[in-house]
Each structure stands twice: as structure tokens, then as C-alpha cells.
Length: 422
Ligand code: SAM
Image (cartoon, rainbow, N blue to C red; front, side):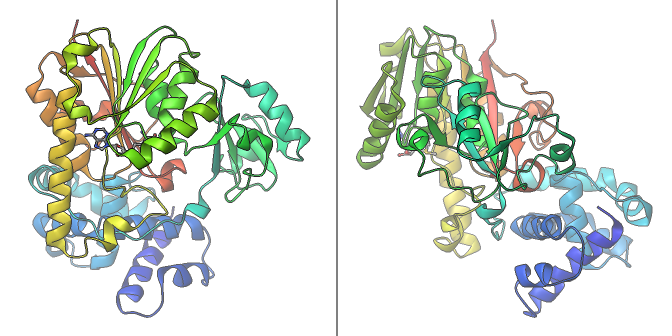
């Protein structure tokens, strides 16, 4: 990313504010290089605009750097505070780094003080790779690769230089590769349709975003474990857990929504798992003393869905800042309550908490509050190769993981691994 890329992204924001074109047309009809990256940068900046604007105002950056236009300041603040860090050299980088302490402190203060209600625009799901999770109860990776090769796809070794040059984002058509971070995950080009294959119809593969495969992988219950999936429907993570435990042990899968429970039952049936007990229940009403043998809990509660790239109901149904803030507050309170409930299970050793939200109020702040109340639990690090970590709202937040379209080519996602202190 060069200084000119940041300047171009800023000019797109300025022109779209002045209603001189949609973001998409301004970027994709231009002659600039790196269109996809610029588009993602603009979308993510706008998604977090209200938070970034507050940082800009409170830090007084504009008055200290009068040459910095407001839109360029927002783009730079996005990459510095929430993105990859300032990727260009030269005066822009020096300008931001000169104020880095002030900017970080202001950001931290604002993130932990209030509900930030970002105005979101959407990164189209069609620009993300198609991730396929192999159901290891039915097939191993080698066999699945052979089957796809048979169907006309070309497998590229993850070490393939072409893939590396393409940053492993699955943009080479009719090619696929194994994921670099997770086992049993294959990466296809965006928009690849595998739903007509019998692999899909028979539950040998599931279409599941890579980030959503992280929680079960990180919970990692050994075969024979007693596990709870507290908010389980429609069952992506339940079926992943049953594969990880090799269908040995017991998984209690709860959901309080009868309709979604049907989808959960179907998915479990399709996966071939037999160790899952599906139950219509409000997890908050489950008595922890009735589940004394449970050692592992996966908690993926309802959230704003703000990280989902093809969903915008978190915006359209809550159009005013006030109603967005109210909704976030109530989600955040629910998430805190349900996480504290999970930590009440007398023999639980590990809880993995996840959301498909980008808001700190549903993520780091929930973890911080729950750990403050439950002193016998702590955050534990995982996947050290993964660069994007929790927002630095409190010291240990860097042990959490964040995923985003522009950095990881996934939906926006958050995962925290919590363990009982021995
Ligand atoms: N883990 C699921 C998967 O990977 O397919 C997705 C879970 S979705 C984000 C959240 C689910 O939590 C919804 O199905 C919702 O009905 C359920 N839920 C919300 N509150 C609940 C509660 N108190 N008890 C049980 N389920 C709840």
C-alpha cells in the first residue's frame, strides 16, 4: 500500500460523501491499481467511521496536522488502529507515528467508554474465497482433494509460488488449495458453486467460512470428551466438534429457537454424527449442576452479525445511532450474562467464545467484564501465526483473535479461548 493508495481511498470517501458516485463504481471504474484492496479499505473505514471520527476529534489530530484532510485522516486512522498498521513509508507514516501514543490512548479511551455504532458498508461476500470444510467423519483431506481433482479442479500445494503471489485468496479460477491455518478446510475461488456435488448433498463437505471454523478447532475437545455447544443452531460448529471428537463422547447441543433447532437436527443427521444430543433449551436456564461432567463449552451466542459480509440487517433495522446503541447494549449485556453462565459449570476447563461481530462491545469488552467477575478463569493464547489479535482494550486482549475480510479474506469474526486457572 503506497501513500497514493491512501490518498485515492480518501478521495473515494470524499466523492461518495458528495454523492458523486457509489463507492464500488468510484473504485472499480478508476484506473488505479489494487482496486480490491482500496475497496476493502474504504468499506472498513466507513464501517468504523463514527469511532474513527471520535478519535480524530478527541485527539485533535486535524489541528496538529492541518494539511491532513478529514477523509485521509479517517483512512489512515483505520489502518493504524484497526487494520494492518500504516503500510506506506514517507511523510504520511511519520505524521501518524508522531502522534501514535496520543492516538492509541484516545482510541482505547473511546472504545472502552461507549458503544461505538459504526456506520457500515458491506464487503460483498462474492469477493471472499469459497471455504469448504471437509467432514472428517466421512472423508479425509486426501480423498476430498482427489474427488475435487476428479471434478476438474486443479489442486495447488499451499507452498506453490503462484498461490503465495496471489496471497492465498483463492482468486485463481478452477484451482483450490488446503487452508494454511486450519486442517480439513479447502479454499476455492470466490463464487465457486460446489452445492451440486454429492460431496455437498451427502454431508461430506460443508460450506463454512474459514473464521467460523476457528472456534471448534480452538476448543479442541479430545475424543471421549463431554462438550456443550450452548447456542448451536444451525449446527456448523456442532458438526465440526463431532468431527474433532471423532464422534466419541457426548455433545449437548442447545438452542432456544424451535425453527433453527430443526436446521440443527438436519445438519447433525447429514453429518453422520451420533454423539450429539440436540435439545430445545434456553442455555441460561440449564442448571450447571446437572452437567457436572462437562469440561468443554463452545459459546457462539446471537450477535449483531456486523462481521457478516453479505448481511446488513444490523444496519437497516437499526437506522438511528440511538437504536443501534440500544441494540448493541442489549446484545452486549446478554453476551456477558451467557458467558458468565458458561463459566458456572463446575468442571468446565475450557470455554471458547466467538461472535461474527466486529464491535468491541460484543467482543473484548464482554471478555474483560466476564473475567473480572470470574477470577478463576483466564484468557489463553492460540494460533500464534495469526497476526490480527484482539483490540488493545485491556492487556490480555491480544490473546484473542480477530478476523476480517481485508486481512484474512474471511468474514469479520472474533474468538477468545478461556481456561480455568488450575
Ligand atoms: N453456532 C452456530 C453455528 O455455528 O451454526 C450459530 C449460532 S448463532 C450465532 C446463535 C444461536 O444462538 C441462534 O441459533 C440462537 O437461536 C441461539 N440462542 C440465542 N440465545 C440463546 C439462549 N439463551 N439459549 C440457547 N440458544 C440461544
